[in-house]
Every structure is written in structure tokens, then in C-alpha cells.
Length: 51
Image (cartoon, rainbow, N blue to C red; front, side, top):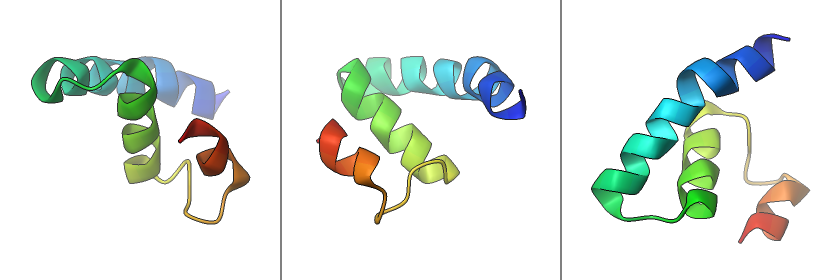
């Protein structure tokens, strides 16, 4: 449950802010934020699907 709470409480507001400030779409902003927080790593297969 901790990961879901992190996404709701921390990631979503950061993604919204990133979208406004950097002009990114939701997919790009979410991918960047999750990567920076360590939920997605370079060797994860999820990264290939998102890009």
C-alpha cells in the first residue's frame, strides 16, 4: 500500500507541476518523475513501453 500512497500523495502533484512548468504531456511527466524517484530504472522493460 505504501507505493500507491506515494503515487497519490507525492508523484501526482509533482507530475502536475512538471506538466505546467515544462509543458510535458502526462506520459512524459509521469515517466520522468517515476524514474527520478527510483520506481523505474533504466533496465526496466516498462521504460521501453512508455517511450
